[in-house]
Length: 563
Image 1 (spheres, rainbow, N blue to C red):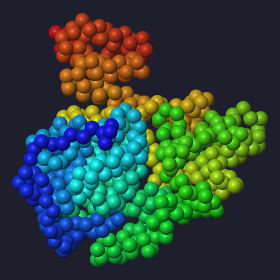
Image 2: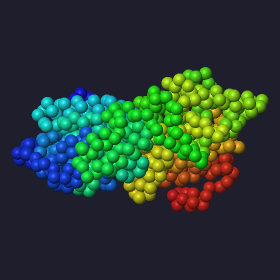
Image 3: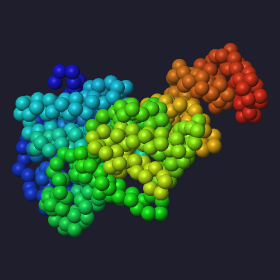
């Protein structure tokens, strides 16, 4: 296990063993109700892999460090009768808060691994294949040491603070699910509900065939197999769930098989061709009408709108905008405009006027638009034989629409969610989790909304298709940085607090909130000279750029701190 730092616990605890902390194999009793088993009875009612589907892959949602420890304790009994070795993968924040409660049930043979030892630096993009290879290597070593297998208890609190963790969450869960298809590997994923938006937690439910609820291990009725989870076809999901509902009185393993019988291609790794419809205007259009099958195998997209506009197909392939004899900036602008307009679409003349205001007449601009639409369709679907068969850019009633695959991930709403959640946690006094949420938002904001779209298109005040929204999101970003300054000050880290104040003021020198926070920080560390200088800078900036005086709140704060 070279390159992987693993720490073995020193506490000894008898878990059905020989009194020296060594577990012994006990004869298991058949599970009388594998779909609903109290956790405290799990050691006597062993739950085999086939009782929860193809993989022993379960999840647990927790609300506090003590709740996390309780759920770990419940699941630690799960493999006691098979002499499985337990591997706990934790981040620094979770390790700090679990405390004595976590030590009360661990065995001397349990392994503890810091998450950065498994995935590398948290500041770098996560390589899922490397993560899985390392877990396989550890599992092989555990098997060589004479254990029946390995039970990985994986806390996922690190996901929000890695650059690609949120965007690749589904792919990570699918990889862990496939890892847990081995009878000697079990995986339990833990999610702190305060750290993840509801839409991500819904994906968590869909990714696991079993879930720990309270002290009860339940078969998960919301589970979707990997091929369906990653697919962009809502009809596949519906068919799977309906088949399970019709068979809800049968054991889960039989239920999964029955669902597969009604879902052609469910055992394949590539999703089947989508056939769902999407509503546009007053009617419905076929999402993939006349689309060529080879263009539909990559149906999950990830779209990054903050900073340079980037679109990734399923598998990580970046959409190339300049490969089809079209103007790159106009092709990207068209995509961004259609993305912003959503189901409203954009009129052909409106788009033509935006992109070619200098055209001599509407016919010339429309001809150029048709060519740009052709280039965009081929950029999004490079294997199409005819751009008219594009499943993603469609035309109806003199409007163009962008039809996104159902599972598409977009960074902007996730950024906004983490900013709101971080501020909520800060106001509640939970500084550690608030900092994690704000760090997640900070990683997502890599620049202004559609930062590489030419200003001549963005600053179109007549249409204002993204100008106001760009500055609204930037305001959220500056507020987020100011919140991080507050958090670091309350954590007695004056250097980091002042750094975040400086970042805000570099963009908006008139931000009174940032000036106030800097003054509070200087007061905290006894720097009255710097405090007075900051107040003078605040007044000068407001007078120079906005021709006004500081607010009464800032004036009162300065007087109180200087006094």
